Length: 438
Ligand code: HAM
Image (cartoon, rainbow, N blue to C red; front, side, top):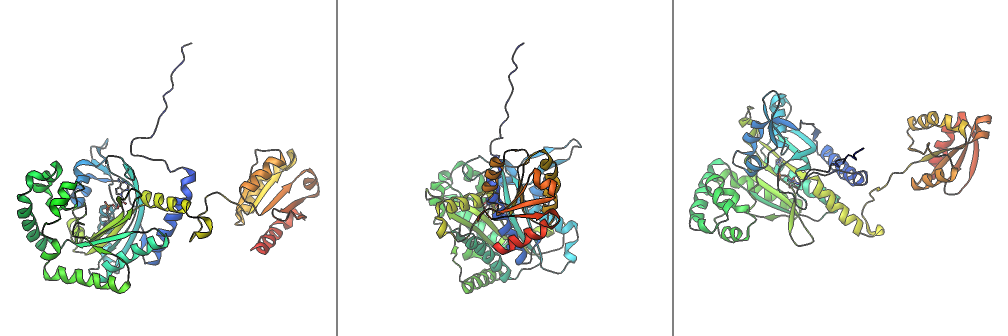
């Protein structure tokens, strides 16, 4: 018979599995982030991964790279034009309007986490499916909220012991930005032929983004360009100054950067990004955010000021893991469990005992203990090796004799002390033994 060649499937470019060994770091980071968001008064919202294409096009901006080049957009069988979400803010605003959250006490604070999709050129730290943790505040335009959001981001990275730089800018409101764009256009006109191909397109469609082009020749040109902060109207200027005053007072490090303009169109006033230095000296953005006071109205809600940020989980996890593994154990500021452990391991010897362990395992698990087992193994030696691997504190051994006497042998894994306990008392004894180890 002709041997059939079996196709092996592999990951799509830009996609990644989060394998069990990575989950320890992921859980650690997500747990820290959600606890922090909870403490700052945010409530969790889960948003769909697929939404109407128009929601993202309208919010993020029809001329942005995200919408023109990077959207996973497709038509459903029902002929609806939909897209995999490239970010979370648009969905959060849609939900805010759709659920009538404007009637809630303000500010309304929500956080979300989950996968986002952008068809970008995959490279280190840049994926086509990546995860964000985002926080959004609706209904407040007071600059103390801008400062609090930036301060919260700073604290998150401080707690994770990841050194960062926060770069802040104000991109004003529609009115002052339009004045500024005229000045910028005038300045860039004489350099048009020297700008990169993309920036030549941006010149007509999205000129502000020339300011954060990564091409060296464009960066040299914009270095002397007029700065938006010099063109802010009185209200935007006061708002920015106040935001910075609050930050000064809270004594966190930040830098003003006139080139932070963000890649999404919905922003006004405060815009910021969080960077960390890579080993090769380059910088990568761990997060970014800003104010978007017109978006709720634009998506059919009442006029509602809003501000938020999102962090890139892959980049944070990779940074954290790198630093954690390089730091000697006694110098670490926190411990990240990197393997599974258990309080108590159940071992069995002989067929009769094996028949009892499924029920015994469940009885102990339901009492809240972390239980380990390897029911498929028969040799005690192998089972003890597994108990050691799981760093079990206690081991319960059930053999032929114990089945006949209706007892269980309990062994302290560190001291080796053993005790035979009537099965009816095992939970009580186990709790006492484990408590005495604390
Ligand atoms: P963003 O700057 O586009 O903002 O994304 C936030 C973060 O997501 C980035 O700083 C980066 O860490 C991560 N990220 C973005 N693209 C990728 C990628 N291809 N691969 C890996 N990580 C990536 C937003 O999305 C806004 N919605 C943030 C916001 C919330 N503004 C107000 N509220």
